[in-house]
Image (tube, rainbow, N blue to C red):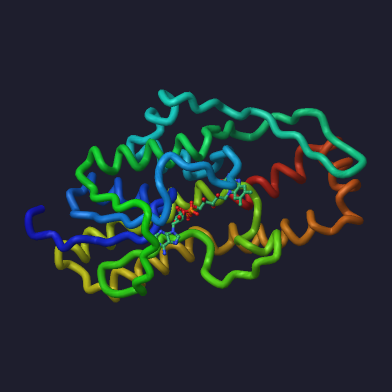
Length: 238
Ligand SMILES: Cc1cc2nc3c(=O)[nH]c(=O)nc-3n(C[C@H](O)[C@H](O)[C@H](O)COP(=O)(O)OP(=O)(O)OC[C@H]3O[C@@H](n4cnc5c(N)ncnc54)[C@H](O)[C@@H]3O)c2cc1C
């Protein structure tokens, strides 16, 4: 696509690099600006679950993770201060890989596909035409422990992959002159809302409930007796 207009992505985490890879697969010129360097350790679990696994498959990235040593997580256990359950079988296995390896693999794949990756500099440009911000948690978010980030249900990595995939078609259409920037932006926002709205609403409720200390022992006891309730919550947040 010789005449494609370049896309600039600020933030080379999972969403930014996955988007960069998917755009390069469609031959859109892409530059990613990342504040840090690869490989780097991040505060993150290693549990990729839900629809993001299919995104990785569609983008041809899943095999790369497996070759790099990703393991399947097939069971889950619940803990409170006074109780724990034994392992329960997950409805679907998750993929587990260290974030340090995962981010570095995605960065290397992006470069192999001809993407330009600028490391080690915070980019503070705004939301102008052709600029996608994939900078993780919102600037100025409450710096109070659990409220640093959106609801904690262990699905954020999946949402990063999924949101990147949702943005690809509209950005390709913008880059090739078939959509205005505003049209592309609105389609991406609409599609992300449609996919994530109810999932995030369930996650917000779930987070409130599991943070109530008086409910933690009874919830763990319930999870030990019946798979039905936690499986419902798992499903609704994925
Ligand atoms: C303790 C903890 C455990 C978690 N465990 C899990 C789990 O097991 N499973 C799961 O699915 N999710 C988990 N998550 C959530 C997951 O880490 C996030 O949802 C995911 O990393 C979001 O990806 P992202 O690409 O949006 O943001 P990030 O991965 O945060 O990437 C954003 C990138 O943008 C860069 N950046 C920011 N500002 C700028 C700037 N101005 N210029 C240039 N670069 C910039 C940052 O350096 C960063 O590399 C966990 C989160 C935490 C905090």
